Length: 386
Image 1 (tube, rainbow, N blue to C red):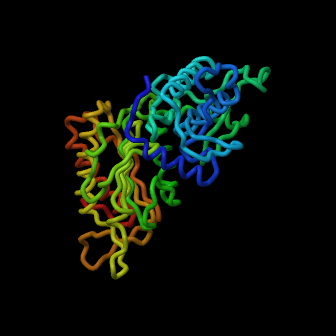
Image 2: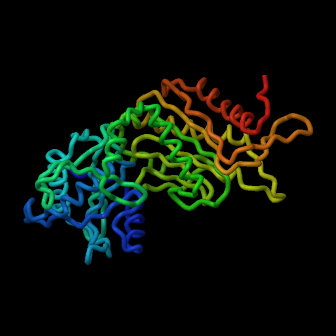
Image 3: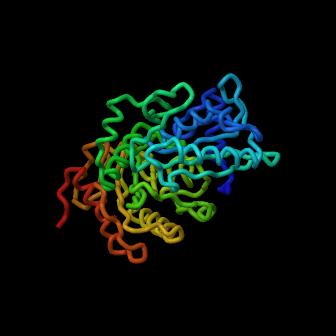
């Protein structure tokens, strides 16, 4: 059965952007012409099946993403969102499920790939295939395929809006990877902080310093987590941090003006980014408002834990804090006539265990927020208080 999830606004916005750029591959969305119309058979759609297989493997081997059917193509260029009938969507889903079962190795768990129909005008819909990063990389396409009848396994990667074959060194590196879930968390946070430092955000933000806060359920890094976020719409906002919300291709995105956002991803990871409290004052002074952030992070934690309970996200949950673009920012300490300033542009608190039990997390919550103070003292060169 096809599932209806949200109104598809985030997916449609990503598609519109790709159409305007005359591209079919974006940073987290790949557009593919419909591989069949009602009545056509499996073999007559071989080229489109191969396009889907390449995109699927690339996403499993990379950061995940969304594959979309229902966009009209002309000369291999997308030019309009036309949609498909529900019957055509169901046929395509059946074809894709068969391909995953017969042609993808190792066999990805069923909860890594989900199918959703997103309504379009005139009772038509887009078929969105959402793919999570796979835990058993590298994933490959099994021959035979048209043009590959006698070939070996085919490996594809998907990075920075590009889909390409993996060379031997990439496959070997992927095969030899033995990262534990905690190491995967560290890698994820490092990659996200690096991207944010370069201004790559899910929506445009004012170019100021940022505080970055991640909540990281262990289950999200064991390759089997995906949640229906439909129940969060309209009820997932944090005062003075993120208010207006919508679904995006990555999850549920709440934003506050163009300074802050909170992204609750489909795999349960939360990314909260704020630049409002770090914007320079009128006199040019740049300060990290420690007390204000303690208050606001408490609100974020309360909201996210409530959502975790509603979605039955399992414990434990880890957390990470970082400051981006804060070199020479003042740390408001109480030492008379002394101003401590942060010495590095990026400061990151190592991942810490935030809570073992979603129903009794207050002690760890206090410790977690107090760690921010220690982070700032260490970053500014100031001695931590006794």
